[in-house]
Image (cartoon, rainbow, N blue to C red; front, top):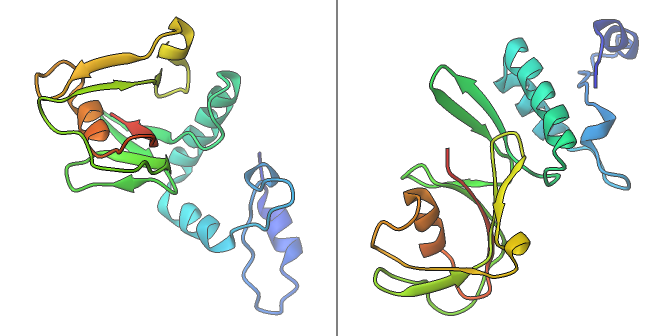
Length: 167
């Protein structure tokens, strides 16, 4: 969604109130806008980044990506992950738990069975156990998966649901 400087100037009635522009698409129906998060978002991205983010949003919508799917901004060969509500570990793993399971986390040598949907950075589905109709299984610690994905699984518990970002 586009905004204009004229709209911001018109909204400032001179009372010294700071105007924060926010696309109405950024606020779910029935929800209150998170002004502080929007200010933080506005302050942390350049104009070029914002155009990239807006383009990514359109592509993700076209691909039917989940609503809270992260945004990726390429900086040469590096990728910056913009993912409000996600956790970034010291090892660089980015994840969001939708449901924390119970019990202990799996360790190297154990076999795990899980369902997944793999997306590319544009939110397009690459692979899915749901489409195949059968869950995946692997033994941990044998380098049988993408390392970041394995680290993400090792941090889960039985019954957990998590989105793992592997840049």
